[in-house]
Amino acid sequence: MLIAITREVSASINNCELSFHERRPIDVAKAITQHKAYQDCLAELGVRVISLPAEPELPDAVFVEDPAVGVDEVAIISIMGVPSRRPEARALADTLCRYRPLKFLLEPATLDGGDVLRVGRRVFAGLSQRTNKQGIAQLRDMLGAFDYQVQAVEVRDCLHLKSASSYIGNDTVLINRALVDAEQFRGFQLLDVPDDEPAAANALLIKDVVITPASFPKTRALLEQRGLRVRMIDLSELQKAEAGVTCGSLTFNHEGRRGDLSSI
Image (tube, rainbow, N blue to C red; front, side, top):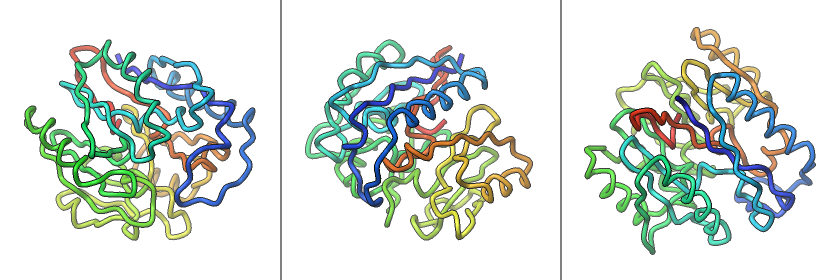
């Protein structure tokens, strides 16, 4: 059974952290409606959605991907790069411990889950404004105990590694080469996003369906030309908070503890 942990939108989301976007007013009611449609999409694809209550004092808490990284054997509770977001991890850990044993990063490590892309036994970790070398080193040590290979990837001019690249199945990575070192993905087929949709490299693979934001129709056409099934979701209000489609859920297969909390 596929399970997705989500969290409801905070009424304080207009106070979210921003690194690369100019601040624009977010319609909270519309953001809540869009997030519900996102959860409904997951449910329609056969995912059991576990929705956690909003955190009124934590504007970014809807982005549940960032406080944790997980693989089949363990979930790692991170220390996020922005100190104001670190309290988000507590309640999430209380939920994750029902499905995975937990390990915890230690300072001075920082790491956001959005910087971690897992494909099989390979884990790509983005060196970004939110994730530092110590965070990647501790991730490598913790996952190395389970025979995962962690590879650092430098990220530039965007929030997270998964802002610049996403795994979409069939040994293929959707990528914006201007934002990430494509040489680190040797051995994969690379599918370049259109030049006029530079933020479209963030996509969410659920089973054999790729979920993308509705604001990137050219990317949808590109994916469909490859024979992929695509679902588009309107996330226009959440995108003002630098959201993509991956950051709104932690999705994993509970049965037999197979699956992945960070890249599905």
